[in-house]
Length: 142
Image (cartoon, rainbow, N blue to C red):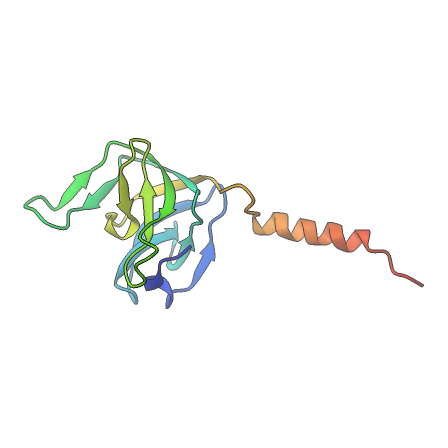
């Protein structure tokens, strides 16, 4: 999913193996993921998508004297939180230690790889392959 604040940004769904970069989107005033080399297109993750960051994740602190916080973790699973609050950020990452961080709090420029998609999510290539198979199974009636 892409957070409500990214509705005015071009987007596409994530695919397994995608290389992503945390990005501050110019027209939205928020942060999210884009494909490496395509900072103008948001890559939308579905709940349950697993990411592996190249380095420990760094977030902005909302308050305090120190501008950044380094998390001791490189693997996270995408979640949506606070769904009962319509005008707040929902996109978040959950780390193995249970820590949850909003995607919009991630420092821009960090890179990650999409390891797995949630069960039941097809890639576009798989979807088109299934459509072709279904079309081949339907024999014309004469």
